[in-house]
Structures are given as structure tokens and as C-alpha cells.
Image: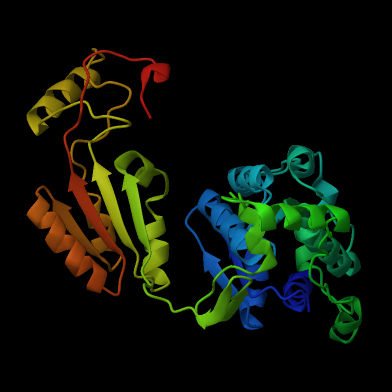
Length: 372
């Protein structure tokens, strides 16, 4: 047994069933050990997407989403998800590798003081000092991420702790830690509740505004379950549609387009519409000839393509085809209808590349003048 196996077994004991991330270096062994004991590892093509997925998982389940990344640039890229979790109070556990303990502050390859960097944005950010501390540290940080006000938490994992061997006979004793119960729920003051009830009973047209964290109570409608509401009889809820749709601009698609490969690898039948105007906010050219003329000027160092320009009618649908999915290049309403109908029937990722007018402008504009 090694530190990696201790980490994986501790996560399983905490009830973790899925880990998101991008592996490399020493953290690869953590992912492998997790897979070997039944934890699903979902590998992404960049840490930003992986950390966002983990935060979404934490929001939807009420338990911390777990994200595993390498040290240095891996942790740096995953900060996107940390910021998202912090701002929205999503429970997130980020596990980041780091250099050997004895090389700290000596300028080792990809060395970064991740704890100092992340401490202002996380609820807790420790570094275990030895293998024996791994289970207790992981358990405490996991608990902290979703107890009280949820948020992100981070653990710095030096490579020597990940690789350190441990006697198999001792490993069971090391991870013999108490199970974590559900997060305690703070009860409202009884008198206040009575006042609210009285107001609702006498209200003529009540308006109730409920925050997004009502889902943490697990009382939202769920397929196949009977949910009791005060004013209605319990009835089963059926899942009507099992298809995920994405609607993106060509600019947004470029941020995480390689996620299509992740979808294809995992057998996801996602239908993606890319609204393509060949630019950020708006395009720069209404024809291939116009684009090429401006591109040639840019290549010569002359004013040509504007800062918001993207490639003219880039064939994003080919990415789906390259990954084993299906792509459609659409110019007309008829083609769009055909692609949509066929796309809904597909069992693989589908990209519908919808070409629209560029909406080009010839002069630079201030971002403050854009209408959203």
C-alpha cells in the first residue's frame, strides 16, 4: 500500500463515488487506486472544465464534488472552479499534487505555494505532514467543505506522501476513522416560524422567493419519487426527457470545445448548438473573401481583423466527427430542423454548427457600449 491507496480508500469511506480531474505525475496513481476500488474517475482535457464539473456536482448533490489535479499549473487552472464554488457556496474538495516536501522553497520544477494562493478563497487549505495524517486530514477538509456554509476546500499533497509505502497490515488502522454524517441543519427560531405561518394563512396573494439552496433539503421533485407537499396529494414524478442540450456561441465553445472528446469517451448523448457568427459578440467579415483580405492585412502588420474576430465560419462540427460523434453544418431553417430532429435521435455527442450573420462593425467599440 502507498499514500495514493490510502487517499483513495479514505475517499471511498467518505462516500465519494466519482472524482473529476486531469491526471499527471504522481496524482495519476491516486486516480488509478480510486478506479481499482470502484470510484469512477472522469478525466477532462483541462483543469478549468474539471473544476467546474466538480462544483456543479457538489451543488446538485449537496456533498463536496472532488477534483484531482497536478501541482503547479494544474492547481492554477483549477482556481476557476474554486472561485465559482466560493462565490456560489458550492461544496468542493480540490486535491492538488505538489513537489517533494524536502524540495519546498528550492525552486523545484513547477513548484508553487498553492496554500498561500488558495487560502483566501477556501474554507481550509492544509498540507498533511506524513502518510498517517492523510485520512484524518482528508476527512476534516471534506467535512469542512459542506458543513455550515458550503464552499471550496483544498489539500496540498506532496509527491513523497503520495508515493510513500505503508505496511498493508497497518493501512486498515490508519484509515479507521469515524463516518461523516449529513451536514447539520440549523433550525429557525420557533417564534419566527409561527409568525411566517400566520402571515401565509392570512395572505391574499402571497409571493414566496426561495433561494437555490432549497435543493440542499432534498425536497425538490425527483423522478420516480413521491413528494408530499402541504397543499397537494403525493404523486409520482416521471422523467419526460433524458437529453442534455447546450446552446453556445462560437466564442464560448472555444473555451472548452475539447469537452466533446470527454463526452464521446463517456458515451454521453449531448446535443450542442454552436451559434456561429465568426466573432466575439459579433463577427468581422460577411464573406470568406472579406475575411481573407483582412487576414492578409493583419499578416502584413496592417490594420485588418479586429480584436473580436474569430475564424470565418469555422467548422466546429468536425470536432464531433473526429471524436466519434455527429456534426451538422447549418445555413438554413430547413437544415436546422433536420439537424435537430436527427440530433435528438443520436446516441453520441452531436454538434450543430449554425451559421448566422456576423453583425460586423468597422470601428472599435467600448465594451461598455455593448448591449447584453
